[in-house]
Image 1 (cartoon, helix red, strand yellow):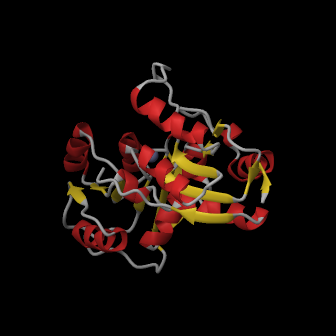
Image 2: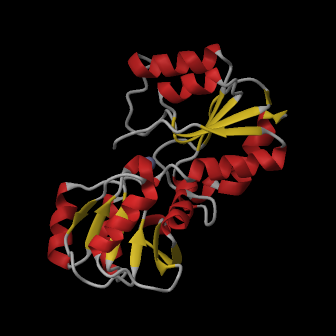
Length: 252
Ligand SMILES: [Zn+2]
């Protein structure tokens, strides 16, 4: 059991949101009860996650994708009303950390994705240094992009879309979790042989074909489901909270 304010302080100290220019507020997005005993983590503050958290008696939810983003109209209607109504009716705190959760060097989405894929980062690239460039942790190369795609499919348990170069040995691998399509050009510039992210957009498919760098779209959700539980488990252990990760599957 801890105070809500203590949990916020621990998350802020760990993730240092003041270091990032983000698309939404990081920290406590919805205030619930002052005491927290059970923390549920998940990828997105969807209604399904909120309902599942209520079912297991959560006092707080920790997510990567919160409720509020730049460019929203600010009205509490439709899905927003439903999600907020559930949180407020059950007095549940909602904590959301976006880019700071991607970037944490050991517990963040990129670090935890690397762990899942047996990769080790050697440098960072791209806007706000969120992209990682490195190689296989065992020092070996992947024989081909197809080889890497098959390996990722096994590790993440889902299909991968591979575009571009199919037959060259891969030494330098770049990755950035989630919707990091726009990091592809910086990955090419940084000297990557292949780029791993969640989603693929139309222009990047052409860049991949034209630049000889393989592009692997492995799922936004699938590449971002490891950071939130890692951070929440860490903070829960620090503060003596019960933690549970609830994975709401998403085909995107
Ligand atoms: Zn994301």
